[in-house]
Length: 145
Ligand SMILES: Nc1ncnc2c1ncn2[C@@H]1O[C@H](COP(=O)(O)OP(=O)(O)OP(=O)(O)O)[C@@H](O)[C@H]1O
Ligand SMILES: [Mg+2]
Image (cartoon, rainbow, N blue to C red; front, side):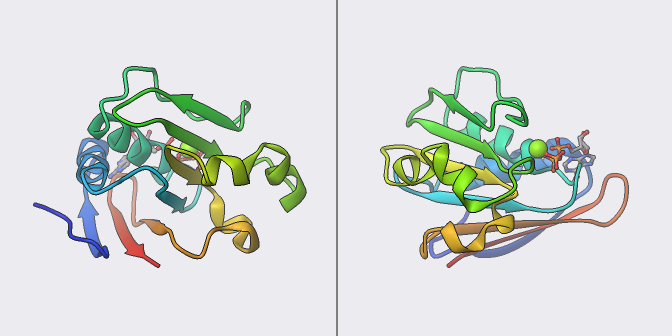
């Protein structure tokens, strides 16, 4: 399995390990400056996919949901900035995190719940939408816009 850019792909996974593998696959085509948004309901697997991307980028740090810290920075082949915007109320709070500086930075930005704040997202990005079909089945759509 491989991905070509621009990405326009859809996958079905039946367990978390398969979603990790999709993340790993996506990592192979990421470069510094890329922004990946992840949308999908609570528990759909956004963090799981991020863990797969990080595995693919040889991140050595623990990859956990930054629900309280809002942004985690990991060291891998390239820097990885992992956001979780779930708890933020408005665009100003996101910008206060230094969001634009991260976006313009030398790493890859992975942004859970980015769809809450469409107006501050860069025009060029990779959108990942995870649909939860049941306890373990997910549809993962990856589109480069
Ligand atoms: N096919 C699958 N893909 C991903 N996760 C799965 C799958 N099947 C079951 N799971 C389980 O679903 C959960 C997904 O949790 P995860 O934290 O990745 O979701 P999330 O979308 O980041 O949630 P949140 O919105 O709270 O941040 C995990 O417990 C995982 O084991
Ligand atoms: Mg999460």
